[in-house]
Image (cartoon, rainbow, N blue to C red; front, top):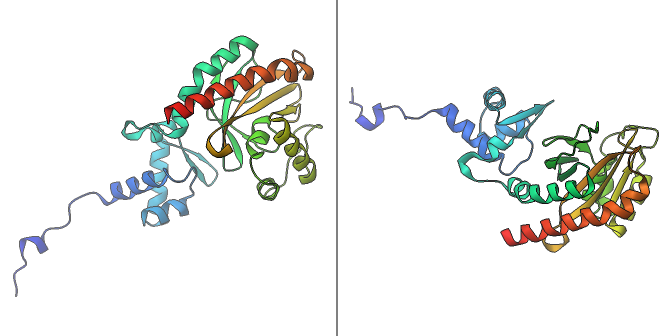
Length: 261
């Protein structure tokens, strides 16, 4: 019987599970959301193995889980000490949001487009308590939120219709625009005036205003927004007093992003 050489007799060293987990982690650098099937393809693993990795990462605070979708949290994006573009944007924005909050005495937020939702990545809280559900990491539907309409306004009409037409649109309040034609008309107006208002469409008693943060090549990289109780802030206040403050904040943030490179 031929003798096995030392190299052929030795089993490969290493942890297959760890390798698959790292492949999944790496895949999240290119995908903002993945399902179990997506993770299995990215790691070259079975669905059962990919699911175990995703659940473990969720339990450890690296991912959040909603339905079939897994999304990276800050802890995952900061692995290796490297901040993602979103983290850098949030860091640059925080003092500017705080300045706008102090000037308006209302909470100011920063949101980015993530699939078909507005994802809030930074916020400066005011003393007023407004029941919007907005917090860092929260998501709002793009069709009825001021941030969402600003973020959608950078796209041609055909792409906007594709994005808002994928799912039935819920009527959140009696004021919510729900048809594609109404929304497209409103988003065209947002594109022309460079700000969006959601007046009690997301929640009764709540008004919101958002303006774009511009990046290179006229890309809208984020939206700065303010939410206020309708009993305290009139629609005319939003347009006359709040718009200039938010636009100044957005301009300063765009300049800071450009300087950061």
